[in-house]
Length: 200
Image (tube, rainbow, N blue to C red; front, top):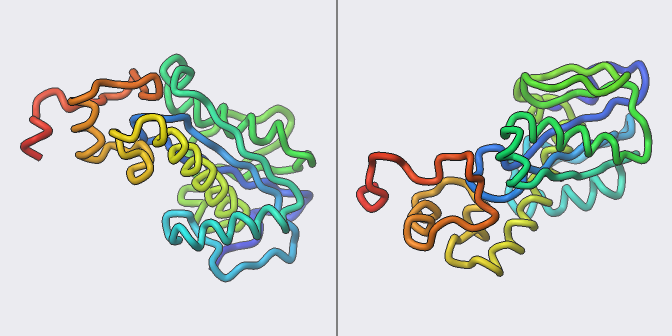
């Protein structure tokens, strides 16, 4: 059972990211402020929901949230500042774009850079504990999936519509065969250094 809020002294914003472990594509983050009476039976960590459920949840969250925003940081910037800093930057950008300024921020995970003048709390596995973080995880995941499916139309050989940029064997075999694209993160290990992909 998800907890509604971490605290109740003012509007609380939940934040989560999607795509940190991918070899290609931007990292996405969402920020969501939910009303006190928000409910949906499927709301959970995005990894615990099916694709059709996530699409229903996204529409419901967007219709019922007090405010929400989704932001992204490009592969090129990920390579410049590293994936942790890029993930935190994406969350900051999402908070920046909210139509309502929250009084408190709850963040999935254990790392965050303080947002100016708003206190925060990091919560490990928060997307399975706090409603607003779970909602943010749904938005970040579905918007990133849409983005990777669009990139798939340009580079179908990498199977991004299926793997969403994660390091599957098929994705790495495509990198070995066709090389990297401008959407690949050059600071990541795109190919194993010793094991043959075709022996996996």
